[in-house]
Amino acid sequence: MNIYSAISANKWKTWAIMALFVIFATTLSYVYATASGYDITFAILILLISIATSIGSFFYSDKIVLSASGAKPVSEADSPQLYHIVENLTIATGMLMPKIYTIHDPSPNAFATGRDPKHAVIAVTTGLLQKLNKAELEGVIAHELSHVKNYDIRLMAIVVVLVGFVVILADIFMRSMWYGGDRKKGGEIFILLGIVFALLSPVIATLIQLAVSRKREFLADASGVLITRYPEGLANALEKIAADPHPVRDASNATAHLYIENPFKGKTKGAWFASLFNTHPPVEERIKLLRSM
Image 1: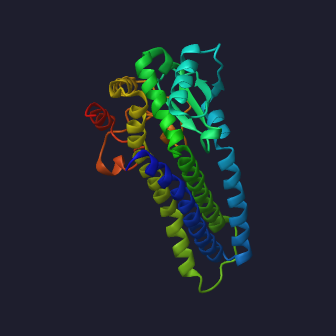
Image 2: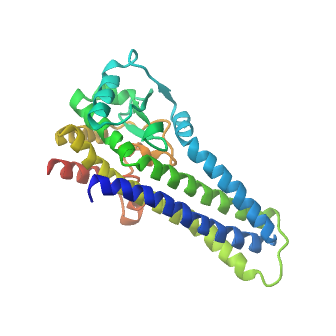
Image 3: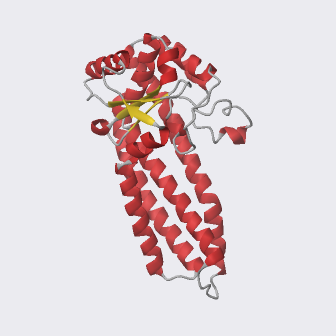
């Protein structure tokens, strides 16, 4: 898959995921409402409120992520080297200049967020600025700009919001089983289905989120190298980031997949089942692919 087909694929995948989500959410709402003894009006109300919340979260996802990460905006005067690297790379690719933020944290890491290239943000930790040389920093920034250019940030913002919706919906149902609802006779099958959905839906949704995230990292690595023409820069940067023992303090399960490498440290290795929940592909594999270019 080339870069242009990847961008096109990400755009239609966004709409496809949203359409499938509406169908899935409608089904969940109906099953949960029926199992809890409520009529269809209650299911529609939950669905409308949740969709409205999801849309709002999509448009403000960058602000939510930046606030949760403790990121602060920086100007050219604050960090001239970082600013000029971002500026030069965006000029070289014909992209709009994204907003630049830094996170006061000794762990080297970075991420991009926003809903499209016109509303993009790149955030880097102070540890990244201190521990990487210019060529390595260019590799990381080019990787993050690739997420912006390839519309990965939009796709992942959509996925994150929808996963959050499924979790909230499942939580509402489980609480209703304890505290409310007028159970109707003959509704046992819906109660059983509701419990199964409540238990499995968040897990399945999270696995989809992580699978999409891992695939995007490989593409962003390759796209970043096309910008810098220097695979070794990003490869060396990934080695330093992975070798650093410090986790990112304000990283959470909701934002971990956004970072260029696992922000929790030491949690990427383990059994096959545990590896399903990794937010990133193995860094050794990424480095090997970069050095084979």
